[in-house]
Every structure is written in C-alpha cells, then in structure tokens.
Length: 89
Image 1: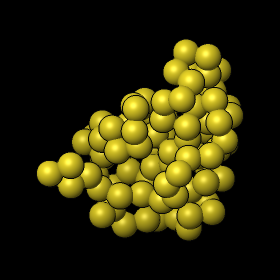
Image 2: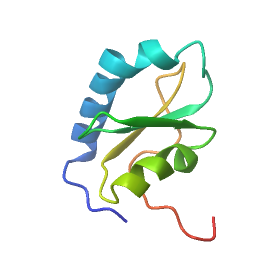
Image 3: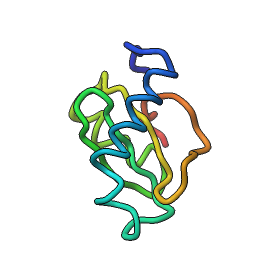
Image 4: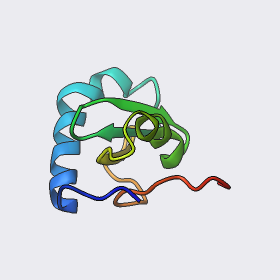
C-alpha cells in the first residue's frame, strides 16, 4: 500500500480542487457514473468503471501516487482513501 504523504482531509481537499478546476468540464456529461482517479500531486487523472480500474494507470506510472476518487456526475464515491491493486483482483 502506498504511504500517504497527506491526511485524508488534505487528499480530499486537493482532489476536489483539481476536479473542480481542471477535470469536471472534461468528463461530466461524457462519462457520468464512471470513476475518475486523480493524482493530487500531479493533477493527472484516469477514468474507469471502478476505482481500482481508474487508479491502476496512475499507480503504474507512480506507485506512490496520492489518489482521490470521484464518481463522475456525483460528489461522493463509496471508498475513501488509497490502496494498491492486488495481483489476483
């Protein structure tokens, strides 16, 4: 599991700020219901049907990525935090 550099509150604040500033206009209406994973350090993001699918490309590029998940078109997602995908998932 990646070690968090920030508190959950700070990851949420940064993730929401990036989503509102840079990502929302690009994804809402096109990908509603899918999940966007945002690296709160770089602003890079990826989209997938589930959180781990969206997070996988970001973690492949940077195993220590600090990731915030947002369900596109909604303000909440059912998972809070970060994780590393297991090989058998």
